[in-house]
Length: 70
Image (cartoon, rainbow, N blue to C red; front, top):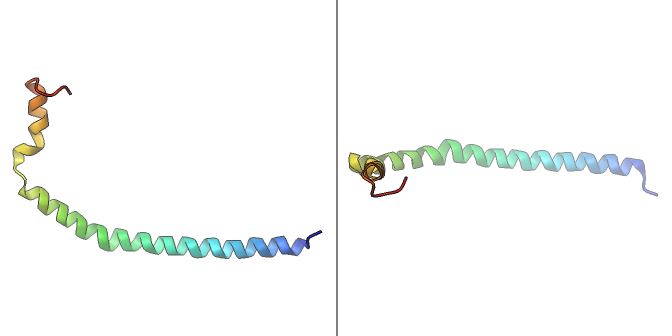
């Protein structure tokens, strides 16, 4: 039969592995949220500023006039 200490050592090493993976994913999440997303949001707002104001309401006006079922 297996040594009971084997399972406790295995559980401890799996805990270390789990925490290391969690730390790596947290770091990736922080980089994406703090560095990549703000610059992308700025690009999206600049692109939407170039659109005419009526384009966002185009579907609503067409739905009121019966052109689009909505």
